[in-house]
View 1 (tube, rainbow, N blue to C red):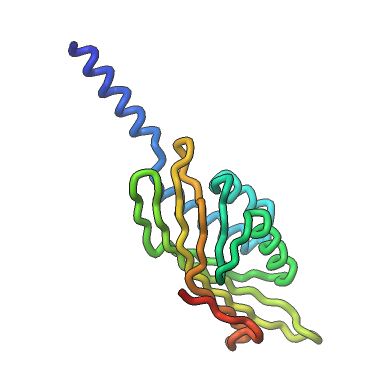
View 2: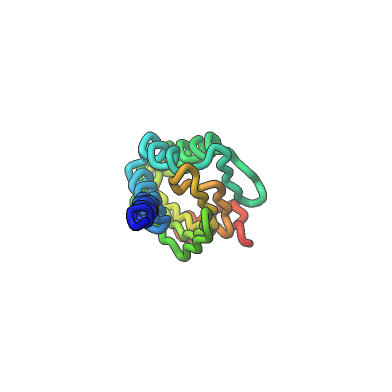
Length: 168
């Protein structure tokens, strides 16, 4: 009997030790994405995201839903439009795990620059707050949805012409 109880305890301990903790996973995920953005590296962004998103991942902004592939295309457009991304910073504001899911609120900011007509460089600032739902799939934490709650864009410190800020 003692051997049987010991076996059960050992199996339970190994299972707990092998389980991923969501907080370090998301912290590393957003930090790696920030590095990919500063380096304007779509392959690094994809290598960071692809193993950490669910097969049915959706990004939602302003009521519009986009697929993972659409999101990558958006990133490529940002990298093409801005030859210099001087900073990309994501801060996890909250992480509320509940069983096999977690709701994560993230504030992100990006500062980039590009030449306008002529030779003048222009500064572009983007801020975004999202609510991301992470799910444990096959023992790994993966992002299932990312919903933009608020977003601002500024050009040379002023609201970006034609941009309608998103706010929840």
